[in-house]
Image 1 (cartoon, helix red, strand yellow):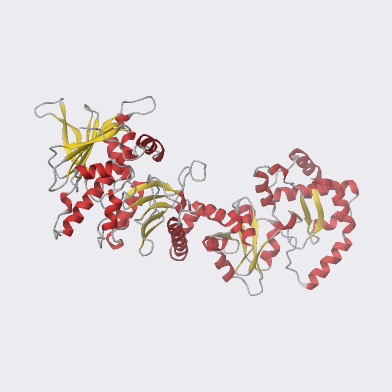
Image 2: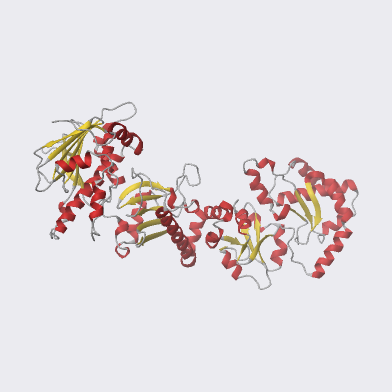
Length: 621
């Protein structure tokens, strides 16, 4: 029996198949099971073509058999089988795919799903085996055996293999320093690989699994009893009709698959057919996982092609701002790369991702309308991520995400949407007002909010570090500008009030200059404001930036270059202000220092010298 060479540059190409195309050694089992499923589909299709439409698919199976003594792993199917010529044609030529040729012949066979496309999956067996033997028997033809140790070619010869179908025997490599091939002989490992990659192959994947039982007639002697186990679920939950799936079934699948102890906040079961067909099962969690927001967290959906898992986390299917979504996508229309481990970046993938993005947004909007309490709980967990999505990439996604945001309302004392804020605005109100602080209690007590609240206008309370950045990127909502209560251009005064303020500024210019001199470079400027009512002073930043935004900027890389000096604004109607004009320069300096320190504390800023402040207060008392 002469040894034949592969019909390609076998040594170089086979080495590429084994060492470069596949990144995980364990993938070989997925490939062999997928090929076995394809072979059964071919036999089933042939039966239909001959009019045998009553054939029972439950008669078909794929069997896995580990043998520790012989160090072999066998994968058997009762599919179509191959003749010696087909063995040589399909296995003797690397990258010749019988499945692709078969799929091109299918006519109106909607119930047939073949997976192999490139003719290289079989050769992944050589990642774990130093010899592969294939016994195959096609109905009505003599059986044949194909055998190869890899790069040095193969042999094909007749054999007496009786069952219809194919049996592949892998003679596992010896263990080395970097690889333990014995793991592929362990029941638990094989079961986990089937569950991970091939759980939804439509045919049963069976294996003899041992369990310990007490020997009959003994008290402490045990024996291993073997029994057939079906390792795969076969029918994916997502392929069932929605009306057949209970809420408990959805939730149980979520807990089992994504290891969450809580029920999801919402479930989306999407089935799309047409130019691009796919099914998606998506879950919105209630709470973030422990590593959410860290570098170790990986977003992405599980990706299946006809029920076979291709990628465990496909990042391309979810934008970062929806990175909290868990779930999967199954599609027969994906353009896979040669190893089927990754997707090619093409329009199909982009189209699915774009559709899913819209579906998720629509579900969030539905929850806001129909399940407000559930959405509020969800938003407390993931709202910051949505706000980052608004701010990221110069606000490209701002319009898409703006209606999913919630902010605390100062007037209503609850969380509201931007639309709800605008709908409740008095007719004369022109802008959307907001105040930023490190906590809700801080914002509610900010002196800068007093004048806006007095006018009867609501104020959005921003407490996340990203909030103000997000609003400044959006600029406006429904034609209403976002304006900080700390903005120096804030204009809520009547013409008479403006005229009176100008007179006060003229009258107080000398006093303000003295206070500025007393405080030196601690402040950018000292000026009068009409934004305060009961408070004597407050701090404001440049260009309407709040003190809170300065704090956030200081925490960023190179944040120490951000200056932390502000404008000191004084309330000319406060009783204390009238007292300042009567003080001598030394006393004025003491009072100016105290007022400045008070404004620092109100803004949530640390004092440069708390001891000096305490001493000054005691002296005043």
